[in-house]
Image 1: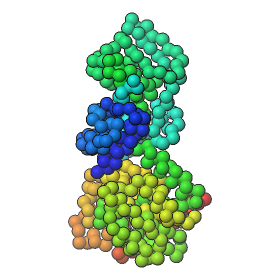
Image 2 (image 1 turned 90 degrees about the vertical axis):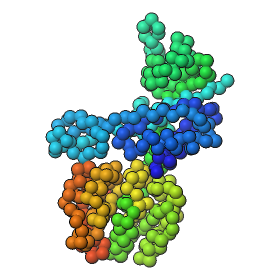
Image 3 (image 1 turned 180 degrees about the horizontal axis):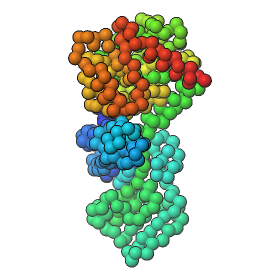
Image 4 (image 1 turned 90 degrees about the horizontal axis):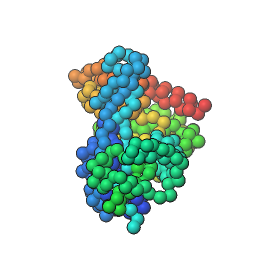
Length: 113
Length: 295
């Protein structure tokens, strides 16, 4: 459900930066551990973009895999779900180093004539 | 702050329009770097529009990689590179709330749980037990009705209701407006009851000191594993309704182990708002945290 308000934020940021020019493509970066579902964003995007400069824009989403680093053994652990403890050494805490991204990376806009 | 170049931001959107240097690689492989004021767009005549469209992730040779604008020949389009955090605006307001709360020595706690875990009952009990010792006010978040705020006001404590409508969580600007209306006293405790939902409130910082997750023993022991974001974002776990344990097949130790597997730093209290069992630990934590934050 939060994907709707997140998509509204995406459209608002893009529209503000486009400053009235038409947006034809938006590229996002969404971490696999961000609790945001790319499919839900895609579902909401066209609706949220209606009647804005981003109406009809293509949406491209780069999904960033989760990665944690153990504070004890120092190993990097690929993560598909949030984990608190290192599965390798069993004692260290995992510090997330990737997978929580929620960013707009670029957009394509029509140039001023 | 922008994670790419460290530049500041005003509305949560980071966009630096003028990178200090600019690196080119030409078709023959020569490379050169020069200072560059980006008062214009870049035209790369060696790359046609089709090649550009076919390689959307690898832009030609701009370093640092943001934010520049490339003109796509033949299309009259520019690609604007950005590093905008989608939740940046909420984060900015949350930080403003945090400063405002700290200036007045107000300890704000964001109470989160699934619907029916006993947030309001625990709040009522906490208010009745502590209101003569600590100044407290309450912000109630629900999609609809002001039933909960009325329950809180019945304890004699000041409360404001925020109805989110279709929204499934409180956001930082809602807390800001609620604080404008409530004007919580300096050196007080502000308890914020979020919308009953174990997913969305985890993502939205309100500017609170900590999230407190309430998990009742009538739920499944694996709830922390099913909703790791909320248990990961919280600092305190209140296992509620423990008076019902004799009637349930709920493995309390396994539930705690699951929560700690997701978040080893959780402070855990087991309590009953109905019998009062275990409340002293929760109250001590509240008082200790309040006095530590005042110091």
